[in-house]
Length: 210
Image 1: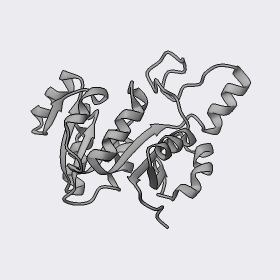
Image 2 (image 1 turned 180 degrees about the vertical axis):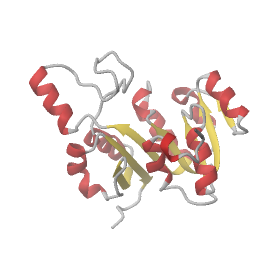
Image 3 (image 1 turned 135 degrees about the horizontal axis):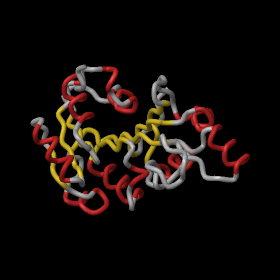
Image 4 (image 1 turned 30 degrees about the vertical axis):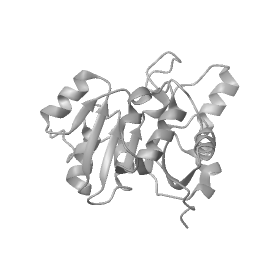
């Protein structure tokens, strides 16, 4: 079976959701790019120009073997070397909740790029709330149900993420549940209850889209 970015059955759902917000010709920085699957998708199907930043050498090696432009670096420390407005878009796909300094990283990306796109697990989902209420245990949105399993190290809700963006002077110009249709930030309360995974598009000083 074909497993590259052209195989829709193998794509990560949040990658597909993110891709709809990237336009042809845009220069994109994928932070925490892993093995480069999202970068490949953006190049082949959206006509974007991509660069990657990945902390793990194994991921860097896999990207380079595919001909992708990726450097090894730690987003929690290395973003200040990038100049202002160097990119059209910066992406954190299921990365922001793994960071030691999410506020710092998001602030730096808003300096580096015109728009920042993040995907994350939403711990405000009604199933998570119900599980916590009925079991008294921290729920997990990963495949393993234990709190120690792989997944978000910094569980947060859609409302939490929106408040962080506001504190940094960023506006949510678009939002969507993964596998859903884009909406404006006015639908945030509904998304916070109903979406297990979300994508936010953040821009500095921009008004909400209608």
